[in-house]
Length: 194
View 1 (cartoon, rainbow, N blue to C red):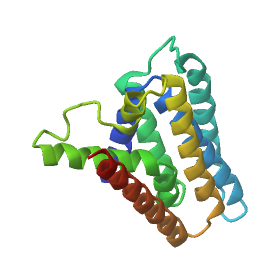
View 2 (view 1 turned 60 degrees about the vertical axis):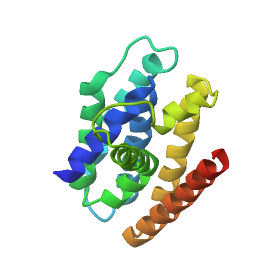
View 3 (view 1 turned 90 degrees about the vertical axis):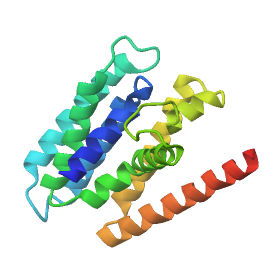
């Protein structure tokens, strides 16, 4: 239950820029599709292959209209549904939680970072603000299109790692290494700014 709530909220918080939630969801669902194909000789994962490919195709088609400048918006219901489905499919696929967590590594790290900052400031962790990573990219001068592409590349890099490392322990080690690196970069930026 906790995993599903985390994935739903992470995907919902990604919806701060039109096209971000649908693009990240496309990458994540496509990665689960490829991973299921890789492991098909071990376990029949026909249902997961079908669901992840349908969701990846749907979100890719939606992204065409959601990319900057957006013609339609997903809203909370759409982003939470995508987070829920990503969480459910990673559970149903034989416990690919490590893979899903690695694919969604940067958005999850961003959600944890923002929640901690809100608590340290004395505000509710559920009260929205513009302190997410994608908002910070806009504040430093990137256009929405460049911020989207940058986030897509980050997620694709995490997905590539998830697809090339085949042991859960290796995936968790890669995730921790990447998160520590990002944390050190974040601390370095804060120190330099002060």
